[in-house]
Length: 358
Image (cartoon, one colour):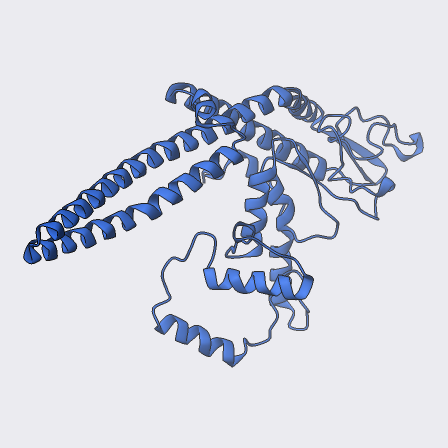
């Protein structure tokens, strides 16, 4: 049967959580500490409140940043408990901790960035790091130097990322292991040794090294891409602000004309005309009020986009915009590199994991 998974996941290690789930199902007296899912029933008060909330119609999509009332309560809690003042854009509510962790990895990692994960850790963490293009590394008390053999720090190359300790040194002749050659996995059974996959291992780590050597150039391309996208967003907001200001100017002009007409009607002593002008002025004033908010929001959004994109002004942002064809080309190039790097890294980790530690 065809395996439709991405190639970088076809050799992925078995998730430890699945092993725990299977054992927990076979043995009734096992205490499962693999995930925060205790066997305690949710308090009835919470169930009742959730039921009432759903009955009141609160079943739609909420604010992208999270429910405003919840975020206000979170801000209040941090202020009261820790004396920390959190702004409106410093609180984001996600559907779960794993989702939040993944979003963080996507937001801060460039290809090849190393992320330290203290061992033991929740099994999803390393996968989230790899999905974000990073390299998971774990300090471990069980390995020489305090580093896990399967998550070694440093250059993801044949020498630094692809070997387990002792593989590059010949075994004692009495063990029958001998010098297996760089990258070969050596197994010992009944005094015999078997070297497997030397050529494939060498090529895998050589490919990872080649990709790593391209990293500085690709980081520059990534910066170019990010800046171009930020510039496009800023330019779009500038256009929205221009439209909002045009509508506001038109509304203010109508209001001024309505006010002038009312003043003229009052000077002429025509009460009926004056009443009609007052209604027109009220309508024009309401219309102007409707236009003020969008204009202010568009102005604030543009200022925020320029600040986040580190543009001095809208003119600088416009200068950083790439034409659609060039933008698509750079985006395709960066994404292809990211996928190739993730695939090569996963392959090397799978090869490394298949080698016995001692």
